[in-house]
Picture 1: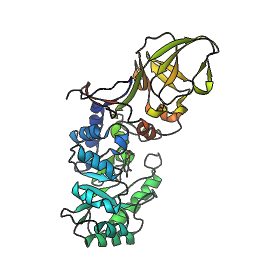
Picture 2 (picture 1 turned 45 degrees about the horizontal axis):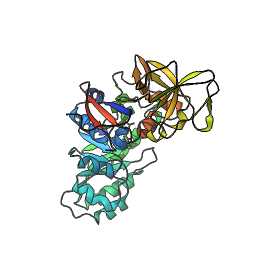
Picture 3 (picture 1 turned 120 degrees about the horizontal axis):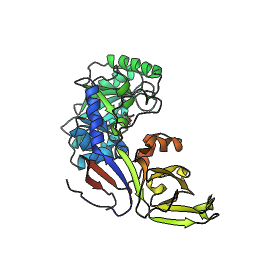
Picture 4 (picture 1 turned 90 degrees about the vertical axis):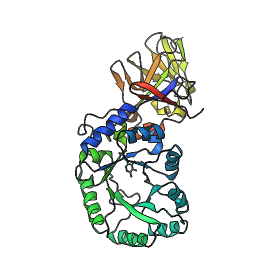
Length: 385
Ligand SMILES: *Cc1c(COP(=O)(O)O)cnc(C)c1O
């Protein structure tokens, strides 16, 4: 495919679709034959781009998609994606007709939802439902055998609903100690043992459990963060396979370079004072792009070397201290690699005292994405034009 549109600013994200496909293929080799792979593409595919990631994952062997909300599922359908899609979060009962019309699978965990939703349904094709069990995450889900049996019985009364799946979610699968996850698994096995009929899709594992536990694969795994090439946590990074390839990098270019005098101030609040005469570069990226104010003092890569962010990060721009006079237009890497020097998304997350999931999601829609396949730019996504 040709590059479909353009962008007119010197800041962009590169998404390596080859890396995503590699991660999907590798995890498929690792899980048993017959276990389905659900690619989790919620939150704009963790900032990587819904449609491009969904298509790449499906092409590489994923057979289901998952999102958090119905809107996201409808967005995928509008783009022509026909694969099964599960909404993992809550859907309003009054929106069930949309799910039916677009063949979107829904998560349920309350019997009153079934009654309410049924009153909005007059569709012929049944809506496929996944029963969510809360085995210790404390977020959404059925907690007792009685509730599970009640909801199963209630659903049986409505021909417009079909129980297609049952699932749970681990709270601590990304920790070294699997004790709590073990307990969750025992509860889950106990719960599903009390269903009258075993649903086709039984699932529990997120990326961490998929990569670390053979005993929680059931018939499907929900693969999110590691599809993007990232370890679910620092703590288990030494335990997970070495084949993960990160897909995302973030870049910009120098748009201004100046010599400042000792004592000169930089940016809002004048929080930075040049210690000696210095070279300062301006970058066209700021907190509105997801490059947060708290990154003041963090580093970027230029010419294969680290350069500090000086002064406050503004909404659309920030400044760095250069070792010397560099030419305008020189590439600056904020997440990624230059000449063997690397800034990982984990490094950004650690500096922000958060996790890389959050950093990836925060990269704003305003930042264009360039998709690479077979080492060539394949497609540009600029949501502004
Ligand atoms: C987000 C999410 C996942 C994916 O988790 P990762 O840690 O990114 O693999 C799986 N299941 C549910 C219910 C989720 O909300």
